[in-house]
Length: 293
Ligand SMILES: [Zn+2]
Image (cartoon, rainbow, N blue to C red; front, side, top):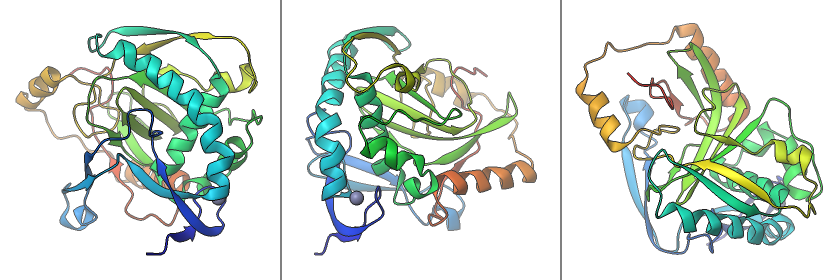
């Protein structure tokens, strides 16, 4: 079987390599059962899930050999060191607690590794729609980051992963929408906000590391991470099982965004996620972090 295709980072037609997201040595080396939204969901009008066995962890054929070697090995080991530090603490921590991860080294490399995961998680058009990502990820010394883009981390003890792709979501309480992408794989979750922001609570920003820490920064940081449950498949839903059951038992009036808002959300999701992917998911939900009903 041919593995040629357009590289999701440089856009060249090349043989594509299998990327582990997160890296294989960050606990991504055992079989998983991956649930994804079936493409027919849009036609049917509600979410249908399909299941797939992945023998050797979560992998995506996304990058050419050149892009892979330019970033993979470089950032991978720094990122894995960080993830292992998080893992040591997560198993004994409780949901909604805060962890202090001390002695975090190579902060800029960690940001680049997280962005590399988002390239593979967000599909072939993500870099085309957000061209700044190429230079940022391919050049380890590059410290250019758009002022309106936010990157956040959290810890999690939920064993099920989540990968949303670029999507628009609407907060009914604050009446605003945002374009974001979330990627969760035990013990770490990452949220990228490309336009707007729903709520910063229980998310730790790391985008400021880009300006503050050059690639060979020799210091070590203490990073505070929230323990956020990721029980449901809905992106950025940090409710515990108990909260979910409680919410489900309450009969709420169905909420609807205006057609204008829906249209704007669709446009934004396409703009930041790429025009080609017309299977893009749009979440119009009132389950946003930290909002209780
Ligand atoms: Zn490439």
